[in-house]
Length: 183
Image (cartoon, rainbow, N blue to C red; front, side):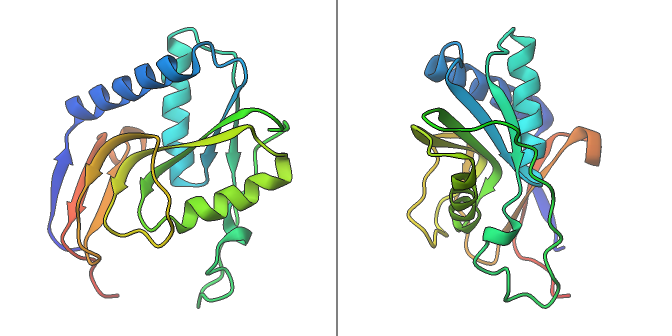
């Protein structure tokens, strides 16, 4: 990829996650009618971290799962290389429950749209709210917005935002690339 710059460093990254958890606690109180769903793959990494932080605050009354949206994507049959599906890790019904859907980056809204379609196989929720660590707000293809967000990035179509995680990349940080390199 082209030259990058760090737009959220480790210390502010940690503070952002703490702030998000406090907002979730304010919204969901004891989480008794709430389930948390991380979107495979990168959203599930973020949701694992949020769930861990909530549990460290003795909040355990929610159910947690991970959702594979592969076969619900609108580009599923339009790719040169097939999508490698993950596996749903949801063993509960979301009927009449508040669902907190989590993804790392909200870009066009297509993944969230696919996730909402995929969630229907688990019941009809009372409400779905969206948490994204990064909201790229100028590039929507669907009228989807975040209810909880870590950082908002205004970027042109060619730009790229990457969330890096300590356990995978050595540091918790968010990088901004001015453009993707051609392959």
